[in-house]
Length: 99
Image (cartoon, rainbow, N blue to C red; front, side, top):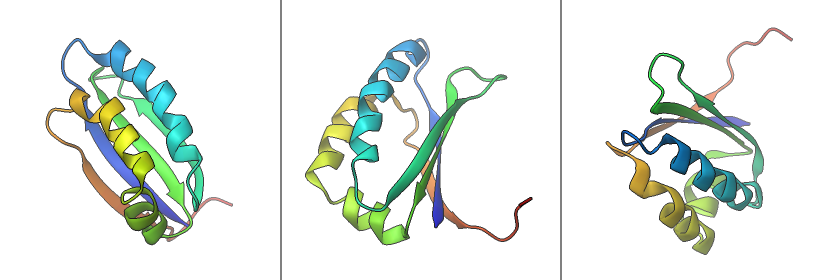
């Protein structure tokens, strides 16, 4: 399992519109092969900043399976116009946990 971490900065005054669009878009990502789950969290100190955490089976499921799919174009049209600047996206592998 890998963890995709995206830092999202939403344009001022657009947070509620972004959250509404995300509630639609999350069904798209959840339908993709290799998808294992996600969380969207809003920053308490900076209310226009979010972190999106998506669990995938492999990086290829995200980078190829999702990003090169027709569904990604729907995701993009719903969400990408909210970001300023465009998000930084990185992938992480588990080193240690509390379990």
